[in-house]
Length: 477
Image (tube, rainbow, N blue to C red; front, side, top):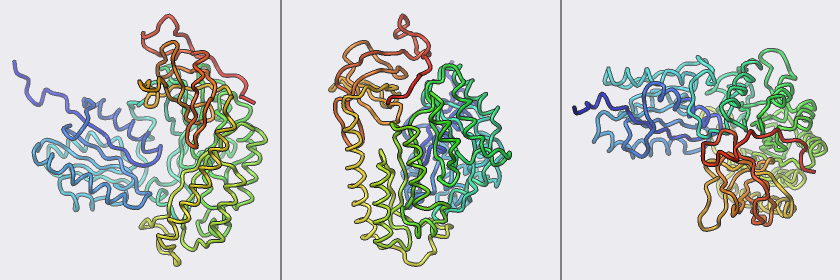
């Protein structure tokens, strides 16, 4: 008997832009869709394309509408195809998306991810676009089903929203005020993930170290890190992103004293100029930032510290920029995500006087990149000859036929390409090797793999060698 179209599972793909929170949200959206009977597909010939958008960067709107325009012919050929737009740009633009792209079927916001399957069904039934944007969180994302991209590494959201009022940032108006999960709920999720084979988790929040504010415990984040250290089988704990204003000594102590908390820290600087930081409404100054870096380095000499920097904020002078370069020289970041300032409608900075010209911003940006690359390269060269443990990654961990290398992350977060001539190595395995070469943005270990600890959840590719991963003890000196 020939199956009707209605009997065939609908296929979907999700296209994600923006931060780790969006990546985590997309895993939840995938879980919701598969729970509703959809199956994952690829390309433009799927039955449903979901755009999970970002509104932080300039031209985010143009990229979205360009992608929607690209899909319009496919939608015309296949009337049953659906297109949904969610995320921060959807929260901001709302019904304007359907006005500009009438072939979009569903628009949903950051606070109502769980509504997507129902909105899609309603749009099919009514044969009209469904736009639903709510102003407050309806269901915490971690309460939703998920389809994780990695079986051994997972995001864990500890809070959503942000109470800061940075003048360049539109996130608080799109994600809402900070809402924290109870520690017991967070730890229960982590334990369930570990039972499912996860060995690495990353704690997520717009400002992770303000965690606990909504339930009145200003030391909650440090306590949470220490509690993660008591979970058997959890190899690695990371978090992103903290705010210097809330970075306290108890968190540094918890990082240093909890063996499975990785010796890595991503802490946004944004600018090294006190005048610019004040205009940005960042509630710390240059010396406060450098003091935190010094304390982290004292407690964890091997820590890799990375940052975010904005170049060309309105009113930034050459002297202001030179102060940023000086902080970069003193902080000796392992790496930096650098951005040219771009106006975002709805932010105070977009209306500020003294917008810096594009050519000046570009010239400063190139100088910053050159300085940071030099510092990163120096730091990486110092690691040549050092033994490292590398968690072979799903996306990065496929063996390169030309080089014979697999790739993954060291405990400090650095990307390592390791030669794997010995036993077969699979994503999720932890390999011990020695660094032989350094580049600004990665390390190479061609000395061969000294030992392999198999991922305990690995399929029967190498069952005789499979065993639970052990908790890592002391950090490298």
